Image (cartoon, rainbow, N blue to C red):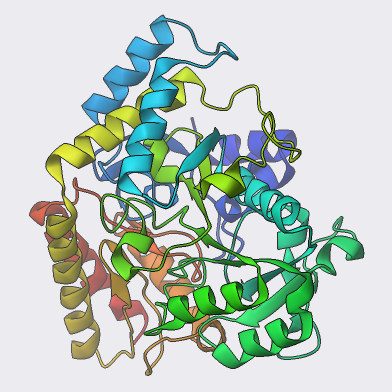
Length: 425
């Protein structure tokens, strides 16, 4: 169908023509694309063009689009029924695989999204501690629950205010905001509010402000601060779960949280999430405890089948070293092209994640990301799109590789970047 007609239909039917705001391309300008199909490392859009995909549905497609194992598992499961609202053996098996991969998740519950996992983790922490306040970090995104759609208050670190209409001040008022990697902010807030603090919630690798890595010892410091005031430490591993190793980033950094939130990767592209942690904390959930959470489609057989197929294939192939090498090669090649064109470009990378940032200095904080040349990213985004490469449509998102991003894909990507960088000179 003609793109303009499809866009017109979409805007008549849905707010902004989309079902999630970033898809509207407001951050980068221009008109959004419409997907038609995808396979491997490529996505075909409604106008017939095929693009190399580095968004990869924002992370869950470690095996690439439409991996045969996942597609076949979905078809088999659907043939037996799409939802039961009764527990299945497959749910138990998926929970056991996750438990084995992330030992801190002594008990876990499947939910329908990363947002729901984070929302539930906060409720569990409040129920377990009997406290109301939570501490999060500026630039870290944990979903669109009321208490998480906040921005820092008037101080450098302090009580937050709502960043979205429709969020009551009373919800935002129980959320404290610190700067990521800034220990002094955390110490100040724990000193002032520690007796009322239920949890410290953090992305162990900040991947919603570009890519900002935790400084040495920062996550261990958060563990110490949580212990000191009696709060729980929650790791939001929705993006980094099963992305850097067969487990969570906690397996890599050696810091054990009380609760972990998962999503994306454990469903192979279908809607799913999980919350898990210490047994005595998790058993506060109903039906054993007084913290209520429920969901008719939690652990639905289609998502579980896709998740099992994905995790089994990843566990069998253990593709992490290869993904790391491919991503290193890709970013090194892009950096060389930028240097040749005298363009100040940083490419922070960890494993198979990277984020192009137009600035002279390495990125170590959200404040630094906010000062980068976002107008140059917008030019790059559209120039790459014209050359057949699709990045996430925001300078604050990270790019993802999958096992389908082979040498031929990388060669085409470098050629596209070479032409796109000409627009920025």
